[in-house]
Amino acid sequence: MKLLTTINLGDFNEYKIETEGDNLFECVHQAGGIHSISKCGLCGEKYLSLRAMKTDGDFEYLKVACNKCGATVTFGKTKKDGIMYYRRKDGKLEWEKFESKETAKDKADKAVPPIEESNNDDLPF
Image 1 (cartoon, helix red, strand yellow):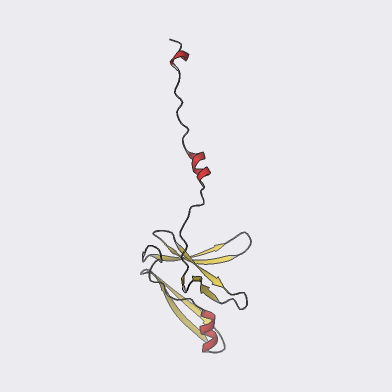
Image 2 (cartoon, rainbow, N blue to C red):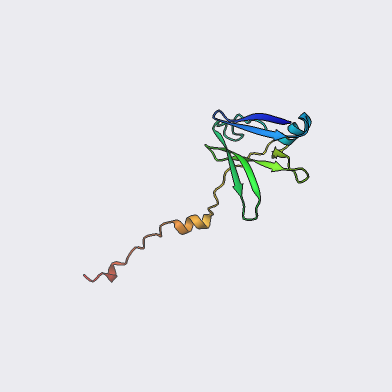
């Protein structure tokens, strides 16, 4: 048996998810806790997208991302049966604020060095 589910992310993106199992229960179970999200949990923007990422250690992540503030909510995956679900904290989606990887030191290194004032005594004229 196959089950086709549609989820909407914001107002602009629609994704069709197909699951397969021996019966309706297994199909719904495979879909896990994936559901539509209408807006960003931090800024309220309705332009969301789906992103896939892979780390050097072969970990795979799926995230719903806000295209305005960059916040994301990550899909989790159970170790036992691989069922996908959104990460939650206290029963609510766990939106993570976007933070640049650039540190204060990196910013300081890129800064223009201050202009040194010369002493007029060093002038040849």
